[in-house]
Length: 194
Image 1: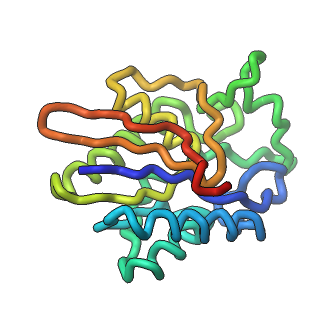
Image 2: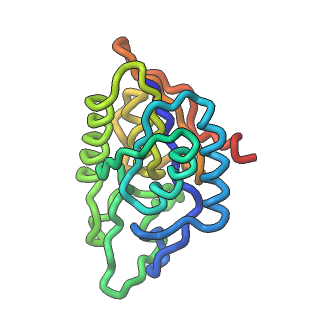
């Protein structure tokens, strides 16, 4: 099975200053989704998967139109729940380490704890393994945090609660899953957007 893991396009910020669950794509995000759909239409995609967040579903739409395939929704591949502070404001500095890396642990904001997020994403990756065949070519529209856990998973590393790669909007990371192992072919490729 070949997986193309796509981060959603540029997104409107939610009212609390971070990317909200139901936030839509911006005009730039729609352009990124269109370019991604055009590029991926020639890759022999046999299945499309999306998280259930609006921004991921909207990013998948151009590829759905180009291929005639409908996205299978896998909620386990949705971004980490950052929580909803009582004052409606999430201080951005509370989401990052002092080194500037995004911390995928939002329990201190009454959101999802790292262990819950990691386990949920890994169960979503298992759904892909169970649901699709060895010869499937799957486009997965998801989020930066999910891609971070997935890339560690497929590289055979223990997933890190710190996102070391800032995945660009519309970027594609490519993984091949075979009976003999997993091969990471590319991380954060956005050349199709230029």
